Image 1 (cartoon, helix red, strand yellow):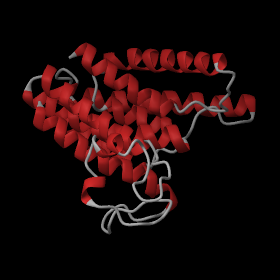
Image 2 (tube, helix red, strand yellow):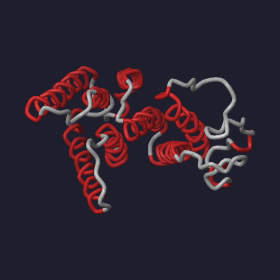
Image 3 (cartoon, helix red, strand yellow):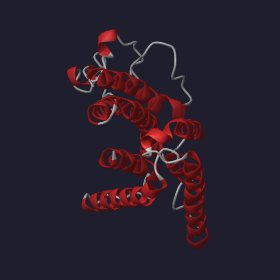
Image 4 (spheres, one colour):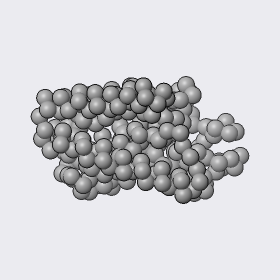
Length: 238
């Protein structure tokens, strides 16, 4: 469990870099880490997963500019989810679930921040689901999961197009049906209605929270809600 937590934090650190740099076209591999504000190269002790953000109190050591919290969020979420997976689940299932969570983490963060679900990440999630979904789905056969994935995509894509035809605006991103289909390869077909229910409940709760705070959002990041619902469903069911 301790090793899994440490590995999750390290991978989460890279995921944070990915979320910060990929949308702007910056390289995410290679090169020295630097402060986004003063561009000064950071020392190794400024890059310790989980710890450096706390020690620096969320500010650059050199220019005192605020550090984007997405880096710390990615590290802590990666560490916690991987640690919990190996604490609660049998070894093989834990490894598969940890990979599922780490693939979902950048998708959830990118969707929450940019309403963007990159096809490359969704495809990677789907391919891994084809290989490992038998472990995380409770033993559902591949053919059942393939049919479920096709139905999941058709359902959400149909709803997305119907909403656009009726309301003449987008109510759901084009990546959400693809993500739902990819998740269907990881889960039992019988889990999919519950997954949608959990994600919708989280969405309603978030909308009510924004209303209470007197804030508004034109479109909820449904991909992020699906990712969170998947984590909840996996721990509840397995």
